[in-house]
Image (tube, rainbow over all chains, first blue to last red; front, side, top):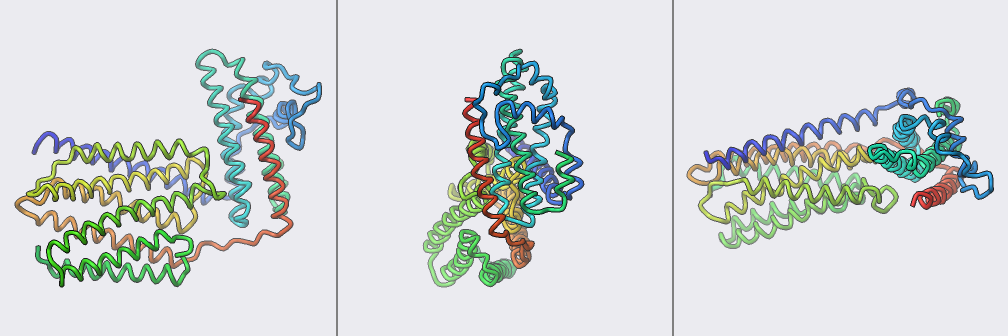
Length: 186
Length: 259
């Protein structure tokens, strides 16, 4: 047996093993997502300070989601935003909650497939927050976190705030029984 | 090469299984959702019948050209089925999810590079260069298909886009078969078709058995209906559209702020 054949056999074995491990891991993850029930989803929500989130978000947008242009808008200092959001850990908690929000929207979709539009919008918003948090993590590594925080954190918080409003609106419009429970969790 | 009774049995079983699957696709109206997958199954039926006909009544040269033409068509259709499954999963609103475009390019590039690297390592024992091309080509195709289906699963889970019931079943069947096929094609390459073709033939029968199991799985899964859904009221539909417009506008403004 030539050395190249040995390499071939070993490489194919590693290749197939890797494919199987990846497939099993992600298949189990997808099964867990599909089997989630309402209580399990709510348990996954990380604790965030709702009033602080609203304060940071409403500094740049109004309740309807429109950008504020009045003189009293965008007045929060970076240090205040940092404190209200709970720093990078607070943003990471919001990032984790984004995934739960998407799952909540898909939970509704089990009964109303037309809710896909909202679910897709929420998914894209979640990805956007991931992007913002990613920039902040990079800034932390290069020691420029303070400057980056205002630029990326406040829009991320505003997006998160809008997402929570969207999910609540979705449940409200669907007249779903678990709305009160969701209001408390979010 | 003479056909044995077992070869003919696999041939007949493959034809029967494909005919049954096509009946399911037609009776259950699945062909409307999966036109390319249906075309792939029809082409498999046509391929089996055409090759049998040419083998019984044609020449060796005729069989050679028919086999290669239909194999090329089969590869194109397999890739088209991959496209159909990706399209049904990653186009939730009728257009490709824009946050996944980069991931698609990476996935295709890595899949081709890995499959090409593995294929380059293969050194099958064969008399003719054409046999080497067949063995290496089959291995490359199996490696690519397995990567694309596993990659699809990874992207769907990571991006939060769920598989619809029947898309998941077709993809799982194809994915599992492709991974098994990688092992079998690696075996073909290792044993080759030099002095003794017994191992090559046994592995081919194993591959056909795995594929028959896969077709059986598709028949059972595509016969079943997806879970029922409730009808959205006109009032709720209108509110959702309104909500979507607001969200569109909000996100555009937020994006502009970070540019």
